[in-house]
Image 1 (spheres, one colour):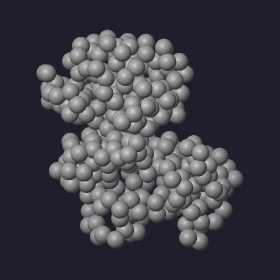
Image 2 (cartoon, rainbow, N blue to C red):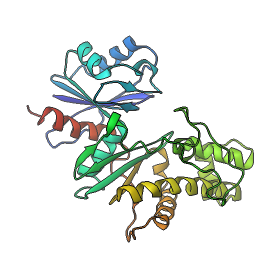
Image 3 (cartoon, helix red, strand yellow):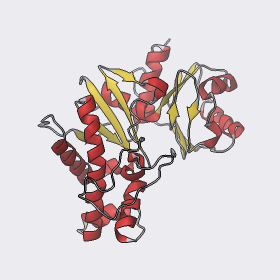
Length: 303
């Protein structure tokens, strides 16, 4: 049996790869974040029914050339050769894929991007991430960084002079002006604080926006303006057929419609149909993508 795991900063979600190629979540346990031995024991517990191979969708950057993981929200994994060390600890072959790449692969193979040449899957949640699939093949790039559009100091908080009162926000990667720092749920909260001097959660901001609040409307307009200006560059660079979205902000259909409209207004190509859409696997992309990755790495389910 091939077992699949979606490992994030809060939970380890697990499920078995079925003969039909699907993976349904069967168990969820808390992720030990700071102790490697506790983490290994947690995975062992989750992997108790695994009999052959393990495929893991992992939050954070993962360089398949070196095997080194860069996982800020799970400190005990940071800088480790997780695939190699975990395989030795479990006594089973282990394959690891970045969680955003897993989501993009799930969408390209079985979801909104099925049979479409270029799929750029993005994550809009507590952070901003992405994965690129071209003609069904995942593109990881040098150092595994392909698709990581959340990082790089490209944000102009004035949006070419159309916005004001928004600060220059530092990103967790150490740079200032990354998309991750303004285009995530935390970024929306920072923008609202800059504009109005009050601290609200992204859920409270979008709730107030839906109810017609002028302050929340100004925040959402600024948030989507900054996000879509950055995203439009990726659209003109990659020419995606679809941009499926996962993460907490993808649950707000009105927000996604606004992001889609603003993005399409900024790009060179004329997209007649929606481009930025909620992914079919927005809730299960990590596990489903890990299953697809397992079939490609290990072979068929029965092998």
